[in-house]
Image (cartoon, rainbow, N blue to C red; front, side, top):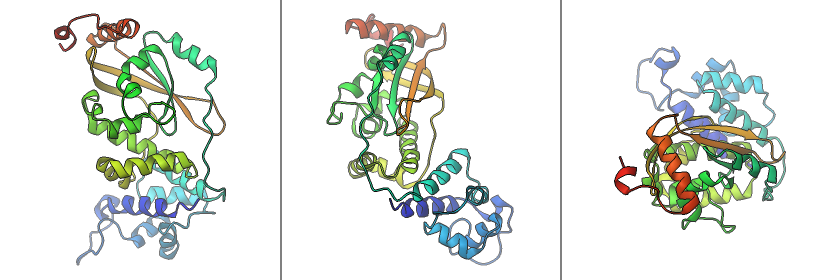
Length: 297
């Protein structure tokens, strides 16, 4: 797969965001023709020639050692996630395998048993494309609109990216929609670096780019993110506001495709814990266990 355009755009956007002052270089006199650092300034900081770095920024990354790429990452002040993405782009450029559609990985029943045992956590499993491939009852209740909305794929599965950018209900569901959208696009960008030959991922990105201006803008920014925990706020249609802590764990389901188990929990004794219990009741009965005035408090 030719991923030179991804390499070129990623390095160019990272270089453009740095100023000479940020990296300890004099601003210099005269008018600068480029925003951010010049290529020769990055080359000096990385300890390589300007010609070599220019070739790299044009996408010629195959065969370059990780040590040299890490030197470039330091010169561009990449964070841990961005450095990992650059190394993934290099690894993806080495094989000459054709674009392929990966077969859907069947989730072992024991994974569903694990999810079902987590009775006070809203838990689910996603693949690298952010398809929700398994969930427990509370996870299905939390993401009810995703799993029952109008933007499911042909197999009837919910996809977090498709829901975030194409389903209007997501703008109410996520209390901070912009942050959720930023994270979603960055997770997909990181997955594209790992698996540029995944045809289904390319099709998903193409669909989102065509239908969502908000996704196009974020995709063009080339920001990347790896799965890690945090705090997220929701406005659930059945139980009202929820403030939940989430923890992602990598699951070794397949050698060929990454899967992540994410569990949302509420702080003990909090209002959100009470709401999560109400959500569990709603999941079991399909009816809110309290009045609307109570759940929106």
